[in-house]
Image (cartoon, rainbow over all chains, first blue to last red; front, side):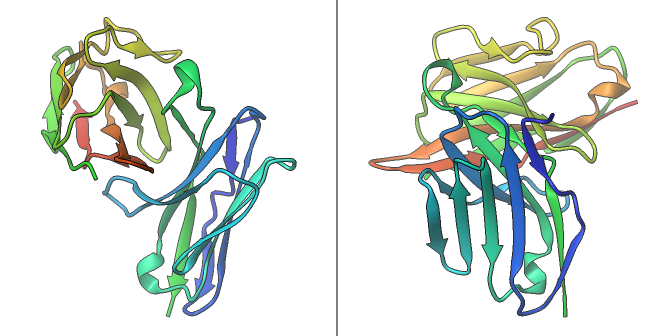
Length: 114
Length: 116
């Protein structure tokens, strides 16, 4: 079992729709959860991160965390063609020697079509 | 927030040679992280570099292959030694963005390495 799993996609949504990206993780000691966007040929850009169960909103993006189910998701509202990219989920156990070390999922390719 | 400059941005190298990648941050940071992204794959942490101490390597990565220097709080280098085509990857450095609060981890622009 991979430590962080994502559906590789591609996920295709029409412009203006809500894109839902999902991520599960195996380490129950994970404390912080990150979503990155990576355009082809570019380095990952941080979208947002979440620590606590529930929802965290930032503009068109909402991260949802359910630690009991070991599940984190990212919702993109009013999707735009410019949102087409690979979305990477990353988790961090934190504490001691694990501080700052991110474990990444394989990424989900999102395509937003006009 | 930290701005990270990485050099070179890309290189094509002969097998058996070594390449040193530089990572410069515009502010002092305690820890710097080096990742590898193989073609079509996600990111894998190679090592953590703390100033004034030896780098700590993740499972599957060794110092002889990926020596790291961290001479000060704004700079680090990663060397890919005795390269083979399997080392063809994007190499990225990362730092924590923080001031009074935590802003997450940001990445440099990456070094795209092709070994022929």
